[in-house]
Length: 255
Length: 346
Ligand SMILES: Nc1ncnc2c1ncn2[C@@H]1O[C@H](COP(=O)(O)OP(=O)(O)O)[C@@H](O)[C@H]1O
Ligand SMILES: [Mg+2]
Image (cartoon, rainbow over all chains, first blue to last red; front, side, top):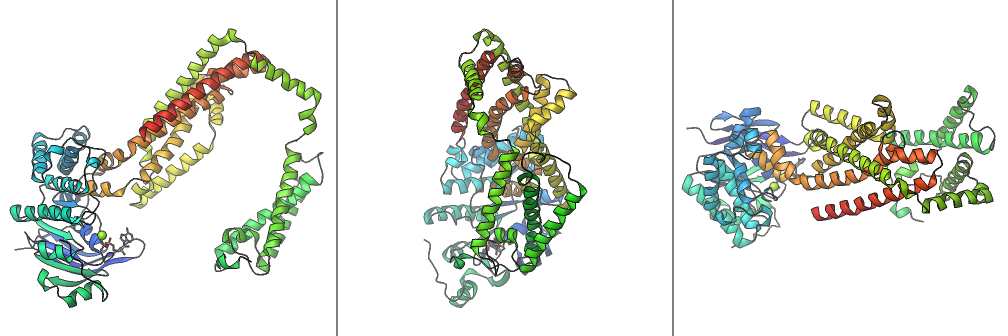
């Protein structure tokens, strides 16, 4: 059986000439909770954005469900993106719009242009939006402006928006990097729940090893754009830690 | 000596080229001011065009000037941009050259603009000033009805121009925003050509457009409105597109990641970030347009400006005074009003 996602010899050089990824290969099976670690600047965000093709890589291939999505465009590209939910460090909600509207925007990929612009989202989608909000525990805030919510709440709205896509896979780019420790765990718990209960594959960039150990089923590490580690979270020994983060790095706990 | 903060940049070819061209201009400027304005004094400085001999003399002098400085490695213009002094030229010399350029410019400016303190302070001159100021402060209120009616015409000219220009500017502002047009070569081409057209039409003052349109559609408010529409589209598109270039790219990424198409991405990720600034620019533009509509009236754009220029032509300064009061009052009210709204929108 083919892996859900398969990355082969992926390299990416930005237009300014900077090479952010060098010959990266790995694959992800359905249902995994894969965490990507690495110093800031090591290419984690670039990698995630290539998986849902917000970025087109300069070379190598990405297969999603056995399909080569490396160079797709137009409708095919939008369909591909639609199957993958993404959440971000800075939540990226539309601050002036209501929470429920933000969640509904997760269905833009399957809603016609005119229909969506005139606000006519379908009944099942409105229903799904409400359920998604319920799922992340903020149904009572549906009519509030998104920017009136706390950081943790905003990230949960972002998760609901991603759920709205009925995604096969979730990408999370340092989802808790701007949250405090307690809120971080709550957000990570929601991701874990979705992963365990629905079997949705999650690929998540993280900074803190304690979170990695708690949530990851598998880990890959990037260093200066190269894949330097692949294995179970408990295989990250002191030596590996120093190899990934540098000799002077000290592990910080987040509880 | 402040040499510590002077960054030594390499004597690159482009710096040299810039220095040479800059010094060409400085050389030509010094010679032309001396030759045309300062030396022949008042009599014949406006005798354009230049004779071929003159033109050749300019070019030769400028080339000599620039070449000398290039050979000596002391290009003046390059020294300004590099903020560093080339070897062999002291800051003092540069300062003296600066003062020299400034003083010949002031002398030339004085002569060319006919500055004449004698006329300004002569008895006849002062009597004239007294007459007009006197008239202006004793306005003729018989024409107040006419003044208000034409003022209304002016306000609506400005309003219509703004309203017509807004949707057009809105649509144009997206292809005029660099961050949206960076993708491909054809997109960049559209972006660049649109920018050129907008910059050119914005550089043409509305009063020029008004002259064009008053010939095209005849003197009146319609000509004035068309002139304002052109200028407003050019200005608003620039402001709108700069706002679009300023938006947070996070929401754009997030909306694209849901599988939304480009129109949906613009509508749901960009527009919400821009509506308030757009509204603010638009209200300010209407405010500016009322002032411009007044001026445009002078050249046949209709409204209170046209009335004012007619009374001025008839030397009816009491009536002119009335119009100035009405204009000042309305502009002031609108200014306060639009500032309030813009403040509230923040
Ligand atoms: N649009 C871009 N243009 C040029 N360089 C970029 C761009 N985006 C990221 N980079 C560079 O690529 C490298 C990897 O960035 P990123 O993938 O964001 O790393 P990470 O998410 O691990 O911090 C960094 O050095 C960054 O400066
Ligand atoms: Mg990153």
